[in-house]
Image (cartoon, rainbow, N blue to C red; front, side):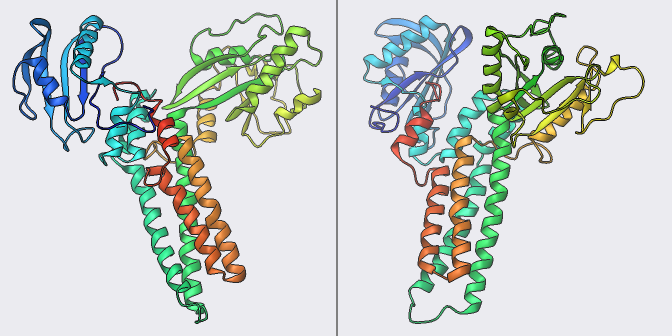
Length: 453
């Protein structure tokens, strides 16, 4: 059985609480025989939605005691009969309960199979099911709130609104195609164009918001680059709040990339300190520089640090051979004039806007944090829902045929071609919420869930 093609006739079981020891441990059952298995273990009738304090038995042996809950279908998390056995959080006890469930005909759940069954039984759509995992894995309070909103259907409502408008537009186009003997009325053409333009605008807006929301869930990457001894490691330590990287007066201390994730006002941000871009590196430094370049290519923002006391008129695109490719990019770049506390006299003028900082004294760090957040997240307030890269890519694929359809329809009024573009766009939107989905996609999504969800 694969996660993409589950056997929903089985009764599944799993430990639904985190691994390890704790005050409470929960074993969850779902499926057609969940109820009789639960009653067999408890030795009593289980009334719907009633907390039974009861021993958990295997034959005559008491395995544990705790609370048993029965949720009959379809009013349960999975839409099936569900039983939860809430006992003590001892790994041997929980494992004994699992073995007792298996002996009574249940099988171990696949990763995410409880949520997958909830999706298949129309208890959740696909974005809501993904929000369950996002809520569990949220690394900041803001990301958790966004996931909770998606679990309540916030993101789905936005996608479904686009779906509804797209359906109405397809009906109009298809109805017009059904009367080929009549010429397309200019009013009808204008109506189709206006509806299509509105749909494109709304899709683009949702795409931008989904991309921003995905940053809160999946995090962003900021890579610190610059020449040796510019203060890159000191900046990393200042942003992290402790000495994560080794600092010495010797240039080129950092030979490899160093990473640390911080909470940047609710946005998970992974900082990467890199080896200095030395014009004549030794063998070890060269390897470090190659890794620096690879990190920069995967960054969402680059922090270019230079020593303001040494570079009175710095060339912010230093002649370092192929290394200039780091800055020849569409990624946002913040130029950081470091060691400003050591400057004597007026500050020099530079050909690019700079942020003045002192990585050792903490000068300008709060301003830098705000600048990073502004570059990465340019929406007012917190995200209105959680999203993933998968959703962003699907929205991009949905937007492309809409724009293509508008261009072609404006040029030649070919309704058949427009109808096909609209169909492709709707398929992509359907893949977001799961109204149109492949077994392979479902298997990939739910395989990343924890076992008990």
